[in-house]
Image 1 (cartoon, one colour):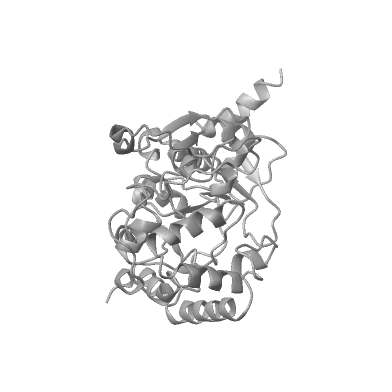
Image 2: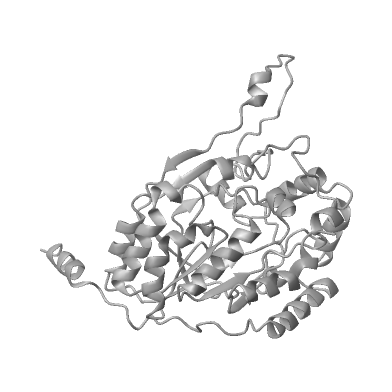
Length: 369
């Protein structure tokens, strides 16, 4: 009996949901000065309901591209996000509330109003060429997926990788898309110099549950296949069994890790579900639509692991939670990692190979005159 049957995940599109979207809700963001409420004026236009929300691309005019953090519970210090917002529509995505800084909702806006950074590669080249830049791993996908569907036509992530390869700067990638295989040529060359590693995010092995939680992401089977192809290309790969959602996908933890190991994963990570800001209400609404008979139980387990709240923003505890359930989950993860040999990998990537290309160095020098 598969997981979706056991959890009674509603197949098809539940009432109030939108096919192909993680949520139909679009609540005001937390910085909004005004709040709008839906009002039925009696005019019912069937064509409006039949018209699905379209994805809109918005050009980002940012002047910097490297984001730095000093968080004690994050293993990397700098990242690049070619996109803001994500069409994958994962209902659990902790990045949803970041759309509020752009004046958009964490709900449907997050997956339909996508900000793209066409100058990302040029900006990165400029920042890497500065004398103040300290070589270190740059992570792609720390906030939103660098290989979401729009990357197929815009190729911004590929352009960023080309810059990193020229400079010899190591890169780590986090994605749940098989689109990463389009850049296997670059990643293969970089991996041969210990400059690249890819982490594939797998939350469930069940296609029905996956379609409900992450409607436009690659299927679980396709992610495992991508993992296998990356390893065959000599590219180190790890699995992100994240997020673990109490009462939803937690029973699959060992199966996910075992399947990933069989597909070639060398390392593993996991994070307990985080529900910051607006995400708590959005996820609760999703539960009521897709798993109404389990919603209260799931939310209760989350609160038990978050000090009675739906989210704990404190460092160290925010990734793993606390209490009996969280401790049990961590022990299961630790045991499975050892059992399936996911304790290795390529180790630390090498940033000692970083160098400013001669043509770029000459350009920088000329700009001084």
